[in-house]
Amino acid sequence: MNKPVTRLAPSPTGALHLGNARTFLINWAMARQAGWRVVLRIEDLDVERVRDEGYRDACESLTWLGMDWDDGPIYQRHDLMPYQHAVDRLYGLGLIYPCRASRRDIQHAMSAPHDSDEPARDGRDVRYPGLNRPANGTRTSEAAPILGQPSDAAWRLRVPDGLIEYRDRFHGPQSFDVQGQVGDFVVVAKNGMPGYQLAVVVDDARQCVTHVLRGDDLLSSGARQLWLYRLLELEPIPVYTHVPLVCDGHGRRLAKRDDDIRLAWYREQGIAPQRIIGLIAKWCGIIAQDQPIRPMEAGEFCERFDLATMPRTTVNFTEDEHAWLMA
Ligand code: GLU
Image (tube, rainbow, N blue to C red; front, side, top):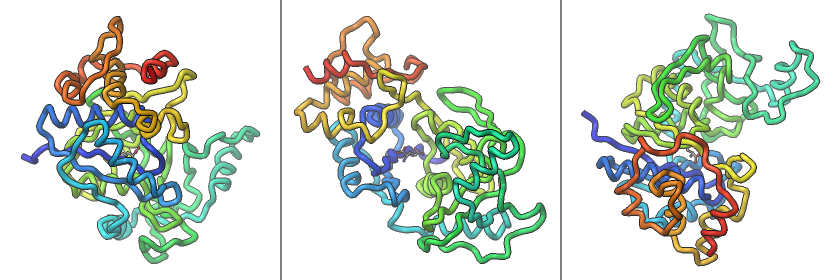
């Protein structure tokens, strides 16, 4: 039997905010309750968006809130070889191919059949329509990509038709049509870095991660990741737990660009971390809805957190809650 392992995996693309804090605190509390090993992994492959100060912020903010870890920090960018091995294997299987299409090409190809004059507003979820996919039964004649070397092509994974199913510990049974929803997805970006889906799978497997806990905006990524586990014959297959995100008063999820939700900002204002934890305890149902918020230590949060009684809906960070933090 594998010893249970989880990871805290911040991206240093900005300063951690209250929503990140909630997810990390839940992950940490579940790990410490159940005796899982905790790995701190800094996900810094998104080179264009990573900020130097993001590295320090991630560790400082977690420590400030009272979280600890057993291994790490491990930086993804320090060693690209494990990802290269995975890329080579997918290439050897004939499952990846270069794609020189731009986001604009992809959007154009998507809207053409419907003659739509309303292109997707945010390219992130545009389904890749297979523009450069070699015909079935054939493979690319180009040499395998070398990580760390930018090129004019991204590399995509051939995704079959059909459903990929798994059971999420919080949301229950999941079923995703990966080809129908996102199509062949990127495993090596044009900048020469491994794509998020591939990197996470390679790292979770080599760090022996058995339990993944993260925001439920990544629920559909679970399906892509499980498909990669299968192709790469990796294990252990983790138990996935995706928890609802925190939104602002307008129903938008908290984003790293907003200043006054950053943990560092509260720290600079002299707000005690116990107030942040108290608010998160309220959001997690540890402090009942009809009870006033009160400051709480990380240790008490850890003892009392229970996934089974956590509210099932998105959390809204209200003006009153902000005022309570600042009081
Ligand atoms: N680094 C990602 C983030 O900060 C988390 C990815 C994951 O947990 O799989 O959102």
